[in-house]
Image 1 (tube, helix red, strand yellow):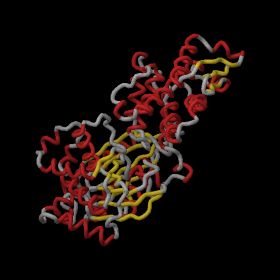
Image 2 (image 1 turned 180 degrees about the vertical axis):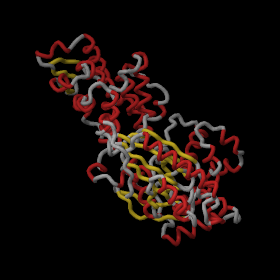
Image 3 (image 1 turned 30 degrees about the vertical axis):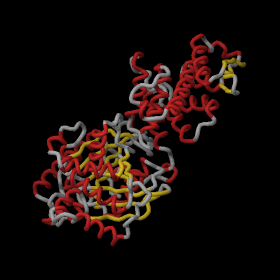
Image 4 (image 1 turned 180 degrees about the horizontal axis):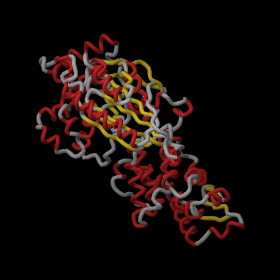
Length: 498
C-alpha cells in the first residue's frame, strides 16, 4: 500500500489522525479526508471533479488530452488541500481507465511529480475494495455487490462478513453507449455472454444486488423523486427489478432538462443515466436478482476497512458512530452507555435488533442540549433521520428519531415523516424508550453517579425506582412526573424503594 506522509498534526489532533484517499476513477476524481474512530471515521472533506478519463477509451485506447488536463489540475488541487488539512496519511489509487489506457503512464508520472504515489488497482483489487465497502456499511450483507464505475463493472459475492468470488468486466458506464449503438439487443447479448463465460449467469437468484457507484445512486434518487419518498437518504434504499425497468422506459422518453430539474440529481451523472439503467436492467435479468439495495459506501471506504484488524472490523459501525457523536456533542462522554444500562431492565423482551437501536438512541440522547430549548426535540429527529449513519435502514432511523423526539420533550406524538417509516407497534416501543430516557436524564442530571447508584425495575404491576436515602433528594416533583408518565405508558403504577 502506497502512502504519503505529511507534516505532523497539531497536538490537539494527535489522537485522531486524518486519512485521505484520492480516487482516480474512469468518470471522476475525488479526494475524501476522514477523521475519527477507525471503524467509521467521519468525513471532513469530500470533493470530486468529473474528469471523464474513460470517455472514448473503448474507441481510441487512450485518455483524451482534454481529460488529462482536467485530471492534472484536480490532482494538483487535491495534493495541496491534503497538505493544508495536515493529512497524516494520503493514499492515491487509480482504477480501470488509467489501468487500460495506452497513455495511463502519463497521468501516473504527473502524479509522481506532485509527490503522489499512485496505486494502480487491478480489477480484482477494485472488486475486493468495493465488497469491503459494502460490508463496512452493511455488515450482514448477503448477496452480490455491483460496482459500476466509468470504465468497468465489478461483481462481488459477499456473505458472512467476507468477500468471496469476484470478477471485473469492461462494462463501465462510459462504455455502454458504444455497445448500445451496435443495435437492439447488443448490450443484452454482451452481458449474457460475459456472465456466462465468467460463470455468473443466474448467480443472483434469491439474492439482492447491492448497488455501488455514482450512476446507480443517481438512479435511486430519481426513484425517490418519482415515489415522493419521505426520507432523502440513499444508503440502504431498495428498488425492485420491475421499478428499475419502469424507470428505464421513463428515462428514454424524457429530455435531459427534465432530469436536470430534479433536486439532488447530478447533471454530470444524469447524462449517462439511461445507459446505467439499461445495464442494470439487463444485469438483474441475467443474474436472476429481483431486488437491489443501494450502498453509500464503496471502494474508498473499502480501502479503509480492508486494512483494519479483525477486532476493529467486528465493531458495530452504527454504535461506533453514535457513541462518537454523543461524545462530541453531548455533555458527558459516558452518559449514553450508562443510560442504556439503566433503562435496559424495563425492556428485556426487546429482540437484539431493537436493543441495538435503543442503545443508539441512548448514545445520542444528549445531542440536542445545545439547541434552542423550543427545538431540542426537532434536533433529535434531525440527527436520527438525516445523520450520516450506516448499518441502519429507514425503519431503524425512525425508531431512533421517535425515541429522541420523546426524550427531548416532544411528547408521545409521532412527527412526520416518522409515522410512514415504521409500524405503530414499533413506534409505541420507541416512545417508551424515550420516556425512560427522559426519566433517567432528569433524575441523574445527565451525570454518571446517580445512574450508577439508582435502578429501575418492572414487576408487571409496579414501576419501581430504587433510590437510597442518601439520594432521596434527587426524586423531585419533576422526576416524579416523568416517572408517572413512563409508568402510564407501560400500564404500571409507580413505586419508590430505598
